[in-house]
Length: 197
Image (cartoon, rainbow, N blue to C red; front, side):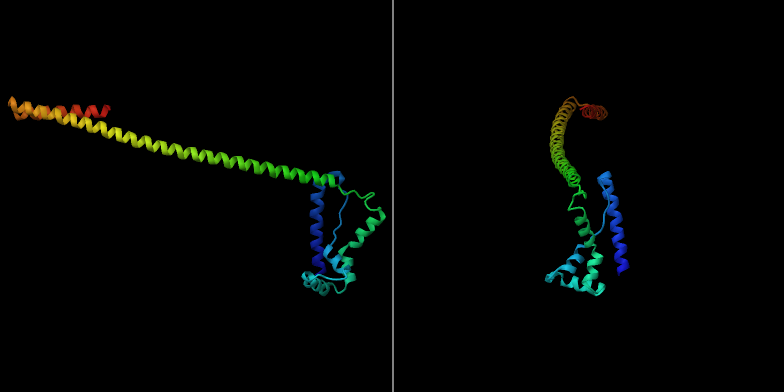
């Protein structure tokens, strides 16, 4: 268990060192890992009820409070604070941290603003497309109706003209061949006039 803990701590330490070096540059000096919970277990006079299970598990693995204190590394922090007169030479770069957090806040704010504008634009475009579709459907329906009306009018005119011709054919006793030729000719003219329209 101790070996596993040390391996885990080493992994956390290496990752933390890498990230802090990237963010803080030359201001970064070094890090050490403190297991705050173990330090608390080692020195607390009373363990809260919600931590008793974790405390018992830690004691089971590491036997004594003294050993928990040792592996927590709390003494290293105390020594540093004592030797350096509480931050005299140990610089905790809060300015850099604030700048990083401020930068992240700005990025998040910009992303949210961009998303809001994008959502608004998308909504407007969607509404415009919907409106165009509705207008197109209306125009299509109107066009179909107009075509139907024009066609009905032209058919009615053709029927009247044909009827007049038939009356004329009866009155002047046209032969059957002439009547058929005239009807065929008038049908062709009617079809051609519809195609032009």
